Amino acid sequence: MMKRTLMAAAVAATLGLSLGAAFAADDPILIYGSQLMTEQERLEYRNTLRNAKTSEEREQLRLQHHERMLLRAKEKGVVLPEEPPAGGGMKPGGGMGPGGAGQGPGGAMMIPPGGKAR
Image (cartoon, rainbow, N blue to C red; front, top):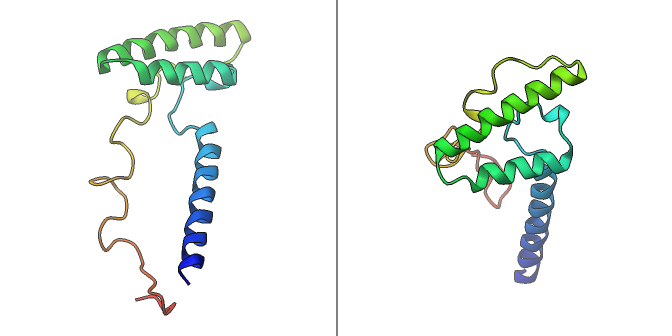
């Protein structure tokens, strides 16, 4: 029984990591003008934002990026919204962790080992 539990945990962890990698490619952080960027440019931009030391530095990077994307859109004849997403998408702490909109204690439906929901 213990071996099955460990095997199930290993499979679940592997599946979770695989799904995490798949979703990482579709990063939920909104990037203004991402449709005009290559995958490499998006990756470099995300890394640049993550490596910024202050929120002011991140905001400056976003504004510079916004200007570049507006110029690129104009060159390609594409219309982008004038304003970038407010705050540049998700910020640290903006997910569904403690204090967020996630399912905290008692928020999730628990199914006990017997298989019947409470």
